[in-house]
Amino acid sequence: MILHLLVIMTNTIALIGAGGIGSRHLQSLSLLDGDYLIQVVDPSSESIVRAKELLSNESDGRIDNIKYYSDIESLDCNIDVAIIAVTSAIRRKVTEDLLSKIDVANIIFEKVLFNKIEDYFFIQNLLQKKECHLGLIVHDVLGNFIMI
Image (cartoon, rainbow, N blue to C red; front, side, top):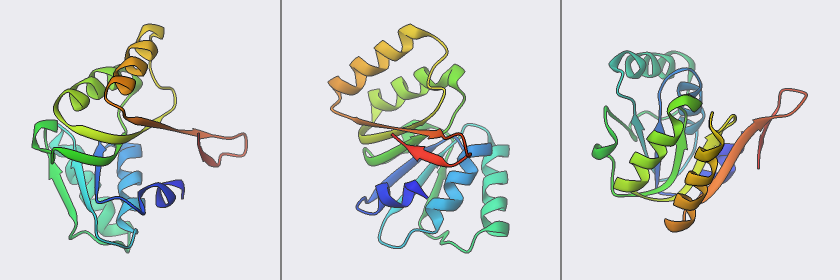
C-alpha cells in the first residue's frame, strides 16, 4: 500500500480519525517494520474501541507501538506524517486545529478534500505557512489507491 512508502523513514505518525477508513489505515500502519510511534486520535470512544477490535481481529501487525487519544492536544508536538481520515465536512477545522497545536511535516488527505472552495485556499495558505507537505489519496477507475 502507498502508506508503506511514505512512512518508512518516519518516527511519529498521527492518524486523525479512527472510523471506517481510519481503522483501515491503522491496519496498514500496524504492518510496518521499524521504530515508529502511531498516535490515533478520535473523540469517539466507540470508534477507538472498534478500531482496536478490528486491529486485533484482522491484522498480524504490531500493536505495542500504537497510542490512542481522544483529543489532538494529547499528541506529541512533532509529527512526521499525519493522516487526516475524517469527513470532508469537518476536515478543514480538524486540520486547522492540528496545525495550530502540533508541528507536522507531512499531511495525507483522502479525497474529496473539502466541501467549500474557500477551504481549499485557506488550507493551502496554512500548509505553506507551516511548511507542511501535502499528499492526497484518490481512487483510480479500477479502484486502486493512488497517492498524488
